[in-house]
Length: 625
Image 1 (spheres, rainbow, N blue to C red):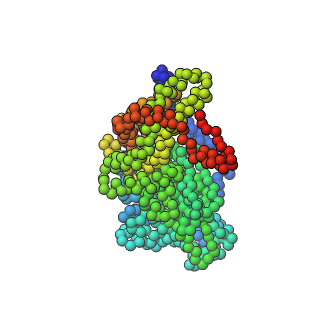
Image 2: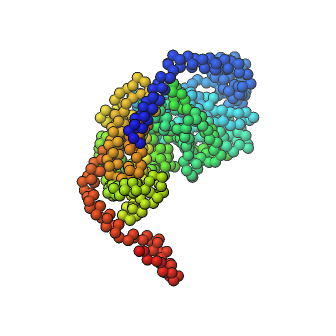
Image 3: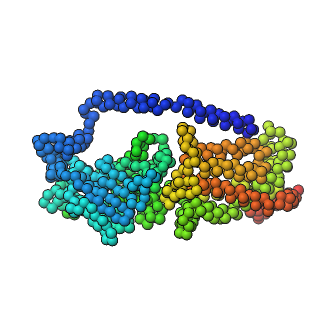
């Protein structure tokens, strides 16, 4: 790829970017289009047939009207009769109870007996506000079961709390709060919440007391609806969306997840087998529902929300809870409301740490047994995360030094052979590509040089590079940590905000990404000087510039810690190559290669075994001339 071709490609790219900006509709046009769509939706809703409203939606609407005092006594009496023995719990005064530990601030409501909101006290949002995982009536947590020829949904009913206090501070001993839904005569359903200091785990045991004869006799599982809007807490919505998804663990089996990088706005999974836990995961925090034993089955769905919405997504889980007809049946559950911290999650057991996006098998192994231990060790002694990343880079470079040296040595040998390869290319025309390739490979074999010697060591380093790509954007330790001009190492650094958005690039300029790009080009140019492959693949010259520029566009909105690490790795690689260049004597290599060419090629172990087997059968192989 010559200079003119490279310039043409760059100009074409700039032309496409300019065209996209020129044809992008104005804000006024976008607002007008949205207004038209909203009007059409309203007209469509007004013309929709009454039959489109499901009985469940109609019931929920009626309950809402009752609880707001918008129906008469006759309608109220009719509604209470529909709930049978739970009819007295259709109306009530909405109450809130705040339970605060050293780590959590949890608000519960008697309507539905559920957790209303959760605040993580040790963390703030990117703009300094309290970090609330979820809050409000939009979150759903309730049982749905058949009882005496009726369908009961507990999220619509009022429970009775075990305390009259509106605020409880949990200091040194666990605190238990019971939300009771009475069915009369010592029967009912209890949600038993237990809060423990120093833990992000909240136990939520469900007790069925004397419910035999009320819940249908043939019922072997009860539906639990758990739904939640996922709130954005980080700077850079697009980057946060890449790590916001739903995970779930098959019982005594592997962990699975939804692909939130998919372009589909809505995804669903119908799981007919047992499940251990379900996680509503954000980039750095999660809400996880854990079964004491297992869930029978689940229907899960995720829906991405538009950029104008303050929430990122809406997650739903309809879970089948095992049920047995007993005098007292207890179903142990627990919630994890907390950070996606590897060590904290690992202590909980049941593979919760798998929700961290550490990549495939090899990158996960490198992260778990190399990168995370080194990071945690340095974190015990050093407070600057920029310095920790620098030391991590140096340590990893030292570990990879033998591979790096072998790679550079192989490229140096290729450089020594370059004149002879050029002679082969001049002697054999291009239209005889196979003959030219055979002559080149014969030269490599005779000289004792492997053309893959410089590639294989680099391929062995790929799992570490991928592990770093996964580790830095999801490492909560880097969240809101400053270094140099970067305000937050967990998200992009910005030295200039653009008044427009460039496709694939963004509306800002990341200095660490620019430094990474420049250092990558410099390192690739130095590496190309040490190899002869350019004579065979002239397009590689263009790749020296195209690939780094592509990565500059891709990583501009990624974690500053990641691009900072790549910049440091490039600088250290460049310094290593300069040192190797001083210590590797090309003349000595040339003499050694010429000496190897005079020797008979060494036979492989496989070839030796074949000849030995032939001799045992009485066949003597012909001697080489």
